[in-house]
Image (cartoon, rainbow, N blue to C red; front, side, top):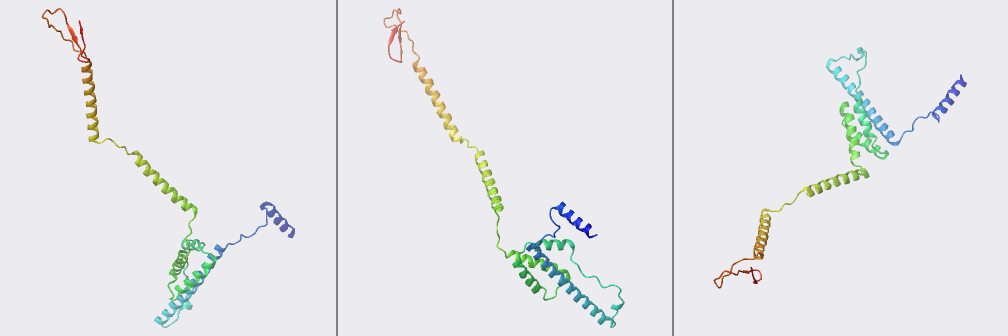
Length: 223
């Protein structure tokens, strides 16, 4: 039998490469377990105190103690599973040095003996208060995200500015039309001056000769 156990142990080491070991707990897990143990202890204490008070109240009202007739003890309050998991996840964010601060703050908050149902919320408030006192360290990813958002907004503004087109105003368009009309008029007048003006000169009354006088250069030639 002993040889079978040793063979199975060696087989497990050969399959998994190393002996089966329990995972080492880190500091955050130890802090979370310590805080949850503190909460469970006070839950049991408050449950015991509340049950004792209820028992005394019933005895005072009836004058007789019938608690020995009760078959089963009254059920104690338990934290809902989802609320417990959220609280454990929140406790994992604490450091070892902050564990004692949370415990002292929690014990001061329950000095007035609150309801059992409020203990988990009180512990949650204490943890959040200690976490808020930690210095806010911003990682490089946050800076990169902010830089990318600012870059995107600046590019969007640049696209909006480049998309706007500046058109000429009405006065500028009218001035441009006037300049074009004046240029066309000057060209048309110059062409009219360059054309020769043919006229028949009959100075001696015989009409046998015609003289062409050009208004451009003032010269005359017979036709």
